[in-house]
Amino acid sequence: MEKLIVTAAICGAEVTKQHNPAVPYTVEEIGREALAAYEEGAAIIHLHVRHDDGTPTQDVARYAECIAEIKRLCPDVIIQPSTGGAVGMNNAERMQPLQLVPEMATLDCGTVNFGGDDIFVNTENTIKEFGAKMIEIGTKPEVEVFDKGMIDTAIRLEKQGYIKAPMHFNFVLGVTGGIAASMRDLSYMIDSIPAGSTFTATGIGRHEFPMAAHAIAAGGHVRVGFEDNIYIEKSILAKSNGELVEKAVYIAEALGRSIATPDEARKILGLS
Image (cartoon, rainbow, N blue to C red):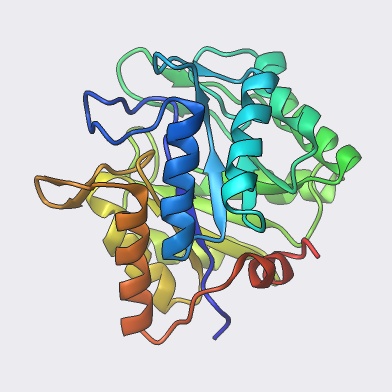
């Protein structure tokens, strides 16, 4: 079985210091959390950025600052900016990080009800616009899917030339409005992607480590981090993203999977 790629989603756009004081906002804090995750085995840093007061932003200058700080501390790590941004942002705002021509970036392949009045909107034209831009600049998309129909959308758009094969998927399980976080549902998602694709599993909240374990055993990859879960155990806040990565690595080693370095991850994902 190939080596395991661990992605650390270090801050997201919604979780705050009120949820966990270790959630990073500033450039220095984002660098600190990226380093903590990298030192424990994360090959990819999935990156949202904030203003110093915690407000989410897609501002390209802020991304450039944060990426420079992460690269200073972790020169070989893969940095994967989000083009999802935060609920309510328009396409132009969300696409700003692509101006930096990252190795990877996220490509959300459907609209999701996030509970209450929050709707994360990704029309087909949005997906096509983002996908075409990533092909133009040579950025590998991580295809974000919150339900099985989004896999079907990605496959159809790949055939139309908006996404390059082989595709790399991130299955987000357990989010309000999306597919449930169960072994049955993750297995269904895995069985639905084209041959030659790779996948990462992201379990939300208490589902983070059960979904990680199942993905590891199934030969996939995993994402952990404060964006998705702030606890290391029930009712015990994680001290850092590094602590969450450390736990994922422990599970992987117990299941016989070794951990990919950033350069090994590049080869697995076709980045090099």
